[in-house]
Length: 594
Image: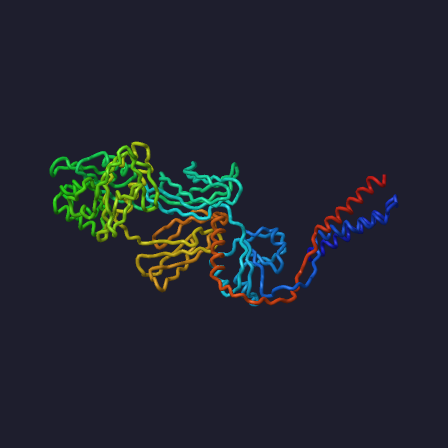
């Protein structure tokens, strides 16, 4: 038996009992009024549970529907005229809206629909692609408050500076404080004024290894608006091996050697004592015979750091071995101190002198990400003049180059005119020192052939949502084995790129999980559905606006016809009736009967 019939039957039994009590009441005054009040009270109570629906006809566009998406305020739907549908993600409750679980299936089932009115944040790219050929109008919701753009490297080498960048959109009337938190402490913060958008760039040098999840926390006074997870990994790759050859062990070499050692780099250090006599130091590395440099010994290192004086002092055979090693992939960093080059490798870089900035600080900038470093208290007079094939790495405030790079075969050659970067360490600016040397080492070091690269789509894979995994293998051989959460996936080969395979998966739980591709294991972070909502909503807004902009705007005449709609009588009328009837019965029993 349906619930409404149970409710009606229960109401009739209750009414019969109340009327029986009224008929056998000793005081017969106002009996008719009391009977009417009981009938009204019970009837209204039942109608609160079982609403009254009726059908009505209304002129309406038969080929047009209203589609409500996430971001639409529930109260605003009551004023919309026409047949209203909503995606399940809109989370509209207690509204006269028909929920559709799948938009493509709905459109296929209703071929007469040719026009859609979109309300809210709109649809994503995949959903919009299904609307080609339809007439679509968009009524966007207000811009979301929160982080609407974000980017950070998911993998980081030890000692590298980690940078989290993005844009925060504050649509509210109060300022918001945005913090980057990790490992129990606040790393960096910024304040965003009310009714404004602001870009942010947080930097830190992680001291941990392996996986970690930082958080971008939005605060408004004492209220926490959002906590967005920022997963990352540190130190997964084998540290590059560094060979340093010094004409004499100055402070720059001393501090660099110690910094490399502390950060687990394998380092071989050779400094000249007198002609053909050297002192050796091996840190995080077994000792080697480096008295005479040759191609065999250079293959054991990823980068060679040498000053131009030492490069000129070594034998022609050693210089030839270094030049050949660079062509085969070795990275070479030459410390330049003179205006005139003394070696063939050093002559790859043009130089010029500029008046020393006496009494002024040297302001530097990394060209890779335009990040500024703390000023150095040194006088700099020697600069480099990049050719069109060069790539400057470090420039000063006026744009003059201090570190330049160019390609030689499979390797890269760098030249630096900076001689006293250790001042950063002396003044406690460890992050600037790490950022400088990490940038140089990463740019110069021997490139390693990755056997496997993994790409995940979308940017924030979430539980119970479709995730695409793309694996690029070193060779297009047998079908790779892809496994995640102990579930074996079915990879599909790219017909154009035979070394590329893809597969689909629907994650079941948030947090770190592991993707196995043959013998390789790749950590992947799965987000909750509620993570990064502002960014996702802003993407939908932008993508829907762009879709509407690219649509053919030719106007078509709508088909108007009388459409039968099912309406519902407001339950407030029955609530008021029940309240008035119950109030009368109470007043009559307590006041009038006394």
